[in-house]
Image (cartoon, rainbow, N blue to C red; front, side, top):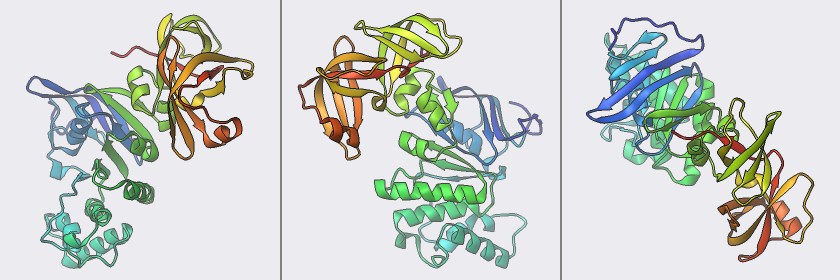
Length: 377
């Protein structure tokens, strides 16, 4: 481990960096050579399933864990050996970790009261009042924690975290205990808070919709490694691997044989012999590959319907039909490809008519739809 006074020259926009950060717990490799720059003022999410390394990364940034190898930097300074209470970061935990015997104001001011040298009482009161006003709890200071709803308790936890004016605010699945409606409201409030404060927010979540809705960038984790980093749209539209395509949103993944490449497009023959034209990644020269196509990018038509020019046709049979309000989700048994999913918007469903379970249909695959995937490790 490097000395805590070591200085690293960061990217100009980086507030924090992982440089080859590795964490082992005995024989378990929890984080494997993580390299990541976290931009100043951004909302970054670590996304992945349980055991993927996302929480370990957050805890190394917070100071609750030290890397076995590599460095964790804040503003260019190696803080790998700096304890949590001496780092310019604060964390909001999944269960908030509020003190039930204290009032809301006492909870928010707890960290300020621990500072040495001591802050004047009036200064603490003013800082607490400002933090509570920021999270729209200006009049709740005298209340007890058990008198607050789940959403209000989360705001108290946020106020306690921001009152110390950290450079980075860490969020460890803070909305996991909220119901769906309240979770959506809190997502919007968190975004507004982050934009108004200008503080870097780093969220850990296994909820892909939460990450897509809130993040400037998402870091997809798998097996202790970074699988891909990008904006929500980049990860959704251009996943590099099956793992990312499968984890971010829903995707039909089928095998195919590449027969030609030109101008950012690839010609492929699917396992059932159907020829399709896909988006291609530059520099990929493999001929056998996996292909991802999103359910909403495909269409459905009766087998006796006319097919638009440039559209490939995959014969299939409807096995499940689920009405979901704004769209209908179809699961289909596709000849030679297995199960596929197609999401049909409600307007298109109304115009063209639906398809009953058991109906023989054509899955419509427009030219340029789908993406050649890299091979997962």
